Length: 226
Image (cartoon, rainbow, N blue to C red; front, top):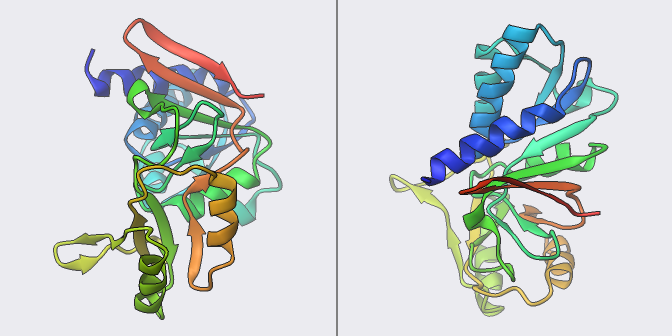
């Protein structure tokens, strides 16, 4: 079964957790795109009323085009469930996100949600984080100095570029990817990155997820983190 088929399966499976009257965080990425498509179909065919809280401008645009009502995170009093993708998940349910340069908004929505669900194809599961580059959202001002500091720490930083220009987040910040290969202590690394001026947010999502739906060739596998 192709990767996109696995993504579609878990996206559709996740919609079963969304019910009438819920406020739902809508993640960003290729797997979530299938979920939002399936949710739009459910809204149109079953007439359920939900409010989506998008984690990026592109998710908001997609949701609105399908008839899903959206609001900003500051315009709702709670979020029942956020469904998002992940770039890597280890065996302790810790994750790396930000391959789509949306991890700041994704983390803001996640920490304000009562429950978080990640939907991934099986290639995203790993024993140890780090083989996927760790994204940092950084302020443009001072970013070269921060880059040098990260180089001295041997974190192998690289500015994320497209067509010769810095990739910009929805908040108009830059992205630096750390090519660390192995992250032995994600909590210690998160604390270190949190302390660095100029880093707006890092892509380590720790102790946040409740349920993971993994796309396997024989069907979606549901894993409960806690």
